[in-house]
Image (tube, rainbow, N blue to C red; front, side, top):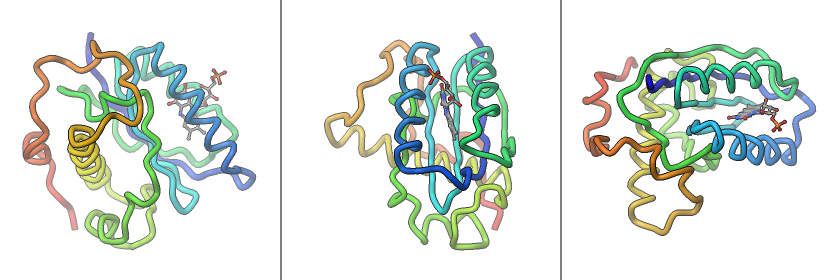
Length: 175
Ligand SMILES: Cc1cc2nc3c(=O)[nH]c(=O)nc-3n(C[C@H](O)[C@H](O)[C@H](O)COP(=O)(O)O)c2cc1C
């Protein structure tokens, strides 16, 4: 199976409510768990940024459904490639708390302080995601898991530690 990672950004529909957002996470976790898809969904300032990882088939099917969802619009595909390891292997879909998108972190990867992934370079979006993955991984190791793992078989046993992840995946910041 080819492990695949797809990243896109979009803008929330005007009518999106917090309850819609919760519903998206509920159905994402249910469906992704069955399909072996993991990832992260960030939402701030009405902008979505999502990373989907899994088999190419499962990621494509999931993305196809997401594209047709009226709860968001202006979907921009940011990156889509084979991946060596999962970055978010512990989560069927991790709903990133907006508090993780600090001004300092957003400024590190973009020229503006407002989280606007549609205006960031693909490389910087990937660098931001790798940064978040590293922090979530460290938190996961330090505390009891907040969300159950999708399935322990999802994370490849050969997965390398996240130390130096940015260097390992050959990403550098493009400020
Ligand atoms: C920003 C956004 C992200 C979403 N992410 C996922 C996802 O990761 N997995 C998924 O199955 N559905 C996701 N959805 C929901 C799908 O568009 C669709 O509503 C859902 O898959 C339908 O499945 P259900 O009938 O089981 O609810 C997302 C929707 C939005 C607006």
